Structures are given as C-alpha cells and as structure tokens.
Image (cartoon, rainbow, N blue to C red; front, side, top):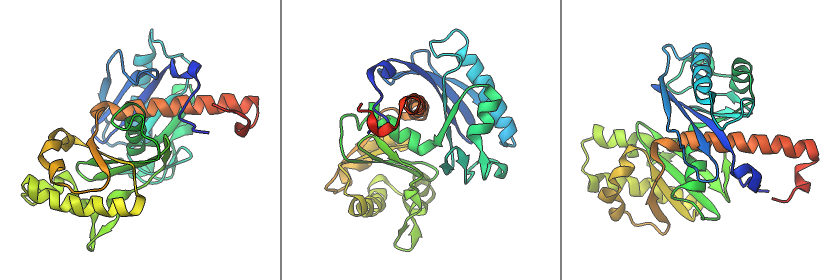
Length: 279
C-alpha cells in the first residue's frame, strides 16, 4: 500500500504542518486535497539555544495560534519536520540545533507538550514528499530524487510516493570530496564560480546519483532553483531534471502529509492489519 495515498475522505482534510529550521519555525494548515495553505504561514524565530524545551514551546505556541478557529481538528495529528536524522520520532543528529536534541524523542515530548499526536520526519524528506505529491513530481511513478542546493545539499528519495527516510546524498564522496563541499550553492559562492563552471561540478554529482538510482525524475530545490535556467541547460543527463515548485512551503506541506498518513495508519490498525486494506 502506498501510505501517502490516503483515501478520499482523508485527502479533503486539513492538517497542521510545522517546519523547524535553524533560524525559524514556520507552520500552516494544509488542505490535502490541493496541497495549498489557504490561510498562509505563521513564522516564529527559532529560540537560542535551540534546545528541545525551548523549541517545543515555540511549536506549541505556533500550533495554538494556527488551531484557533481553524478547520484542523483540535485533537488531530500535527506533522513536524526536524533538520536532522529522525527514526521513529527520535532525532539522531542535530544540524543547526542544540546537541541535546541528539537521541531525543521529539514525537513523545512534543505530543505531551501540545496535547495532541505528533508525527515527526526529516525536513528534506518532508520537502521531497510535498514535491512528489503536489509539486514538480506530481504524477510521476517510480523513483524521484529531490535535491536541495543551499548551505549544504539536502536530499529525498521517493519511490511511488513513499519516502525512503534519511537518505543523506549530500555526503556521498565525489572525487575524494564530500559532495556538498563541492556542489552546494554555498560552494559555488565560496569558490567564485560562474553558472557554467558550477554546472560542471553539478554534472559530476548528478551523474553519480543517476548511475546509483536510475531515477525517473530529478527535482532541484533550494534557493538557486529560482535560477535554474542559468545551469540546467548546461547539464547532460539521461534523466529529466526540473526545478522545484513549492519552494518555502514544501516542508510544511510534507509535514501535513506525514500527519495525515499517521492518522490513517492509526485508523487502519484499529480496524485490522494494514495488509487487508486496499486504498
């Protein structure tokens, strides 16, 4: 079963998605029929230090503000992204966050804090889910790679709408270097590369991914996706490659997808084994 293809009575629902970042925590109520955020986003500053208690309090404040008078139920699951490796609701790394997040059970703690279920996933995985379902990957079956080029390189591996979690493709070795030290947007700026020069590095990196995964589609996100016409024409890949569409909303939308999926899984389990359900 494709756990992200919820039944019709779920796709029309509204769920809260929260996207935690190193400088800001933003959220919105997502209409899962369209992938849109009708009321817009709310953004609060990430507290410093960004420890679990402080960040949890900001998430609670944001959820309370969004839930007031909203279409999202007051006891419905909230989806939350985290900028690090997440396994079963527990963070295993803490990029740009306080180290006390390492091996911290975000799902349990935040659920107790905001008094409603919380579904947690990696921020790049959330963005990938959103792009695959509502953005540039909509309607594409098979393997889709979503690569975000920014301070580092974020990545999501999607197969038939399902995310393979915590795939850190920015850290594969290319010619003896960590890929993101050579092919990220920051690396381009640091080394003073023009777009055509940068395309040579990007070609080397994406060719390696193409060989490893044989994707149907590669989606490029991050800030420089807005300048895609400067470098995509210089790339020579067998795989179709396109810029991301959802941009800054992708994490929120992906978090809401995760919340709805968790809700559907819980409902399905209460009726019997998942394998007996055809959706």
